[in-house]
Structures are given as structure tokens and as C-alpha cells.
Image: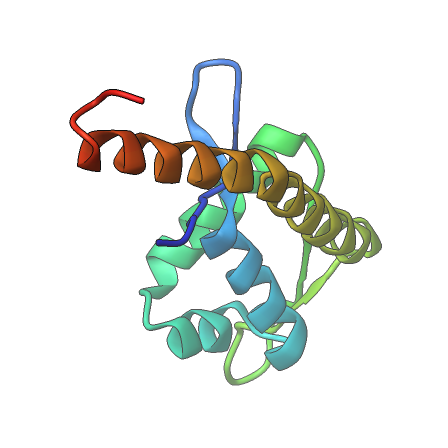
Amino acid sequence: MELKTKLYLVDEEGNKFMGIGVLWLLQQIQTHKSLRQGASVLGISYSKAFSMIRNLEKSLGVAVLDRRKGGAARDGATLTPFAERFIALYESFEQDAKLSLNQPYERFRGELSHLFEDEDHGGTE
């Protein structure tokens, strides 16, 4: 048995705006300097990726992409300095949050083991 967690941030109405999918998209944009290519690598549509970024920017109240207009492809995009710092901060938060679950999870596993042992002995000690 192992523990799997999903962390995400929600706005005041409870709508998700930041989680692992958005993080992966931001990382791919950072690597490829393109929203379109980042979406393609992740196997999502450009419109879905655009919507994810727009939702993130709306929820944070700050731009995360510097969009380049013009040129043949018209799809260049780089992360803003804010977005680069945000990625690092979110990755650190996510890692810390998951690590902080280890102790309660190990306690749960130990107590569950005792529960099974009690069950094997007919519920009596």
C-alpha cells in the first residue's frame, strides 16, 4: 500500500486553477518557448492550454506569459519572471506538503496493521 496525493489551488468559488497539469504546462512552455509546443508535448489542445493559462492568470491577477505576436508561427511565448519564481515556489510547496504527509501516513499504516492483527485474533486481545 502506498499514498498518492493530488494538490491543487482553488479560487474563492472553489474552482481549480493550479495543479500538476498547469505546472507541467508551465514547465513545457519554459522549455519550448511556445504555448502551442508545450501543449503538444503534453497531448492537450492549444485551446485547452490557452484556457489553463488564462484561468491561472485570472486567478493570480498577474500575467505568467510574455506572448510574442507576429512571425510565421505566431505562437511564441516565454514565462514572465513572476511565473518562473511561481513555478519554483509551487514545486517547493508541493514537495513540502507531500513530505509532511509521510508521518501521519506511517502512523495510519501502523494502526491499520494492528487493526488487521486484532481482526485475525477475533477482535479480542
